[in-house]
Length: 349
Image 1 (cartoon, rainbow, N blue to C red):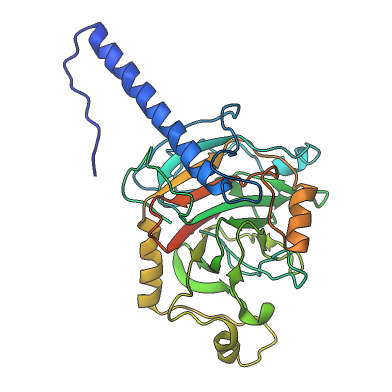
Image 2: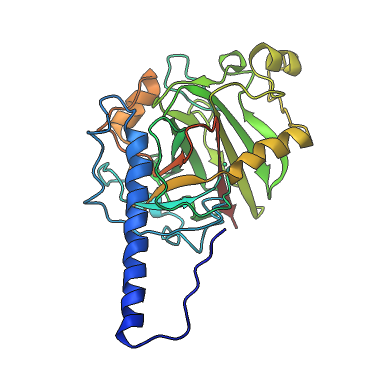
């Protein structure tokens, strides 16, 4: 890993110029990464292509880089600090939907909570749940359009019941209710695991009660966890960090039951059936969280879930290019990597 060192001896204006050039280069590089991550992600949305990508020129953005992007909450030093107070979602509930501003970071990151299903927007409303951490700096790394990408948005339930976008780095309190919306840029397979304080992992999705344990997903069709048919995640009064590990793959994971295998494991149990990965299996899954990724993060929150998003979710159709973009977009920097692990840390006090 390269680290930046500044020579102690400066010669007047030359030192100041060096600092200015360095700052300019870092900002330009981060903006390039923004275009790379978000542009590559949108290139595969219906109506999108390499020449017709959403412009980032008019977005309010902040830029940051990190060599360790463990999770949305763990990266407090490199991201804009949470600005939402408890209840901010309620004060923002009447704002019209708009594409949020974004900031790009290059990093590895990841994860989330424990009960739930994911709503897929298909008529059979599939429910899903939704993690990664980086070790090398990769700002400005080009991202191929066929690299695996995941966009996600965290919604909080406002006092009037509306789903309102909030910063994943927000600290939550007892009684707060949240939901996560997911959008992949490729067909594939989705797995969601939950840990509390990074211990005792259990699989939230696939769920044997939902679509017979199937976990295949389609590109740019929104999925929501927990499903609105199941309710929201609700924080209790026990302080902890809830981690959601969202695993997106091109092929099914070995040693993780889905479909009939998961149904057999659950033995026809009509209630919640908890499957826990073996330590070796979990270690292998988590290791992918350290892969380098390009990240673009919104810096504006408070928008209510739009009718376009809700319609796509309900009907199981792909989001169009002009639909609101996810709050956070993460893209593998290598198109050869067949798995993307994203960790969302949810802190509640």
